[in-house]
Length: 145
Image 1 (cartoon, rainbow, N blue to C red):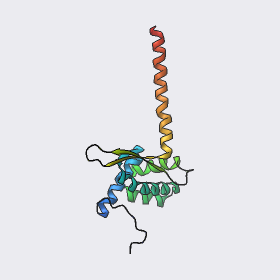
Image 2: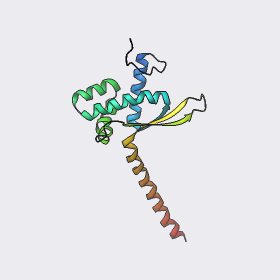
Image 3: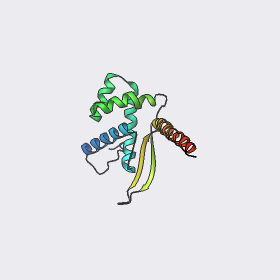
Image 4: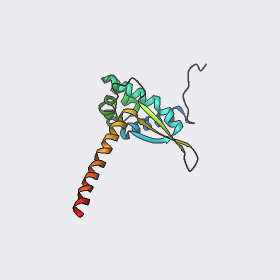
């Protein structure tokens, strides 16, 4: 019986699916957001949220479990030092999936999956250089006159 076994198979074997989700999770941790198909994003969300919950415990056993799944020690360090502390006050819902529409080549539904807490920090950091560049350009325009 398959009581409560609802895994999205993504037309892959179990080992291929596990390595695909591990690689997608590594990319999400490293880059903060990734663009992928909607099915892969929906399959990645529970995996990524379980990794955040694991990282919020921040003990040796949880680090070893994360390394066993992700196979990248540097990515696990970033997960435990940057990504999980940003979500320490949140009790779930660490990822956001935004639908983009169909891909032009094969009409596959595309989506962006990103961390909810990290996008706010990234927007603030992105605005600071833009305002600094605008301020630098404004005095140059004044002196040219």
